[in-house]
Image (cartoon, rainbow, N blue to C red; front, side, top):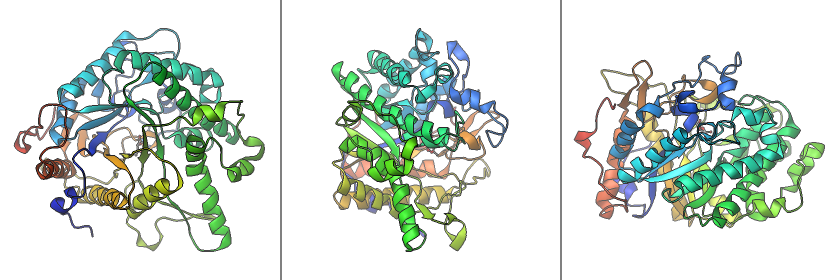
Length: 468
Ligand code: FCB
């Protein structure tokens, strides 16, 4: 079992390391129809019978759209120096093209100013999956036109917020949008078509590259990059068939994204595997994708084990797993980061999401989520190990600030370091939040203060126990 030793762990990180928490628009904002917001593909997907495990939707979610100020106070109380959030495209441009929604833009304007005022750097993600539903009706990410609508959207946000955000991520987890959204269909828009999924992945990558070019042409001052969900993939046995399967899955998850981003080409084994389902690529696309990046974000939750004979059962062998059924495997994070650094000319790396869902219990106003604290601690240790091996790590962000709408799992899975009581919208810091706060304050004490933009975080005793 992981032994928590903050003093030992803080000593392994430099003063300018970025510590944060992450959320996404659809999962926390609510206000689904407030102030002129358009619908996203997730709003419509939630209405499909059986799509969401608990039959819920995100119309209200954590009501962050109305509670953003007190939520920013909670974040500041942790002592983080960065907050990773995403913008809802249909909130700021309801149809995905045409008119902009000034009230939606104003919301993010206030959010960004609120972060800066509290001494935190805004890390903005343009696309965390909530594509305007009207664009889906025109073909969504499978249509090449959506690429150009995305560039317009990015330029619109740059014009409004670009002077104040520290970082802009084009896409969060393109593999999830392409594969879970268009091949297995378990996520919005719920399509099951392998060729379409491959085309979607190409358009996501292409739009990433074109956005980087367009933002730089406008003199963007923010650090620009993308966030990928990656994991090391192990064969269940050393058999040739299992090893071949692991190599292919590594191609489909990791090399399919890393190779075009860093080498301007798709991996030949995956192209061969896809055959006639491979994406249509136009002249110049691959060069456009491979823009230099200022950072690469990695979302890491678990490793993957595959067997040629079918799915490997994570429950076998008494492994330590989270409430998502995901194996807790921090050494996989070190291994992944070291491999990325070895195989690709990577820019500074951030772990942009990492955390766990656990069956929390509220006892006398407290949540003693020791497993989550150990999960986070052990993965921060894994980041330190990667740094010691020479990997250029720049930051780490916990997923997530709040319990929230966990996509197809609805509200049944809780990832927050703050508990949300959905009936009252009260926020309750779990023990993991209190630990993260203490860890960050130990970090500050050790280094004589992290580079933060302004005010120090409130003292521990001032941190509200029931939040808003
Ligand atoms: C990631 C998503 C994030 C959250 C976590 C648990 O794939 O980016 O929104 O759902 O998983």
